[in-house]
Each structure stands twice: as structure tokens, then as C-alpha cells.
Length: 28
Image (cartoon, rainbow, N blue to C red; front, side):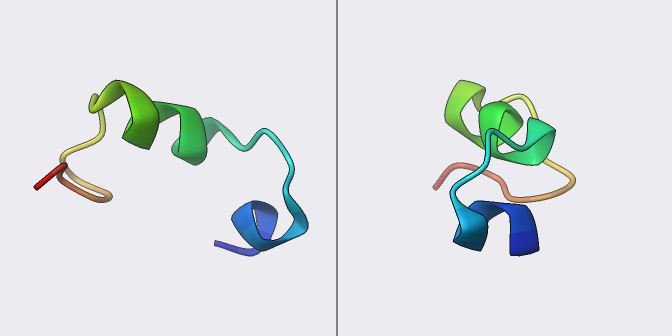
């Protein structure tokens, strides 16, 4: 979360964009 706020290319952010992280934030 913090990395997203700072605008850094966090791994979790990339997973959300790819929709490959259902455990973190499933794409509605």
C-alpha cells in the first residue's frame, strides 16, 4: 500500500494490473 502511495513500481501493484493476485485484491 505504501509503495503505491509513493508511486513506486511495487510488485503488488503490477500483480493487480495483471489480475494475477486474487489473494491481495481480486479484480472486480
